[in-house]
Image 1 (cartoon, rainbow, N blue to C red):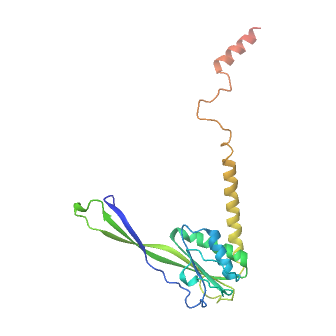
Image 2 (cartoon, rainbow, N blue to C red; image 1 turned 90 degrees about the vertical axis):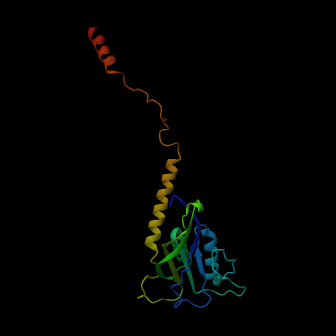
Length: 213
């Protein structure tokens, strides 16, 4: 593709897999790569705890709250590609803060269409359209019980092991960053090393001189 440049990317809409399980008015939070977790969590908690809060830009039209917003019984998080891990983080944080939430997770693929244009139109090359399938995640959190036989179901409290592992990993990374920010250990440069022992010939000469005495 060295003779082409990327002209545009179109993400094909991915339908929510929980339409048969969602209550009316349940917000759908679409996590983007540039979304700020604190903004997403502020909005999600406001809906799950019946507080009016302005929705972030990454929340779909179906999540627009009104002045008469009531306590939501369900909420959905979704992320595509590099946003999957951030969506999972939001889910785990909300489960920890709100508590007693039932969960169903769906892993699907979303389609991206990339359009590539030739660098030199006069070269006789045609435009190319490439379709890529990238992973996406949808997570439904519900205050009300869900069918435990449904694929991807997690009972309330099942986040504990994952949360502990994530917290331990974050603590190790923090310790590593702290230890790496202290001047890099001994602080020696790349210059010639100082010779701490005498040369072998010098030691031998000194030994012979002492023996002569």
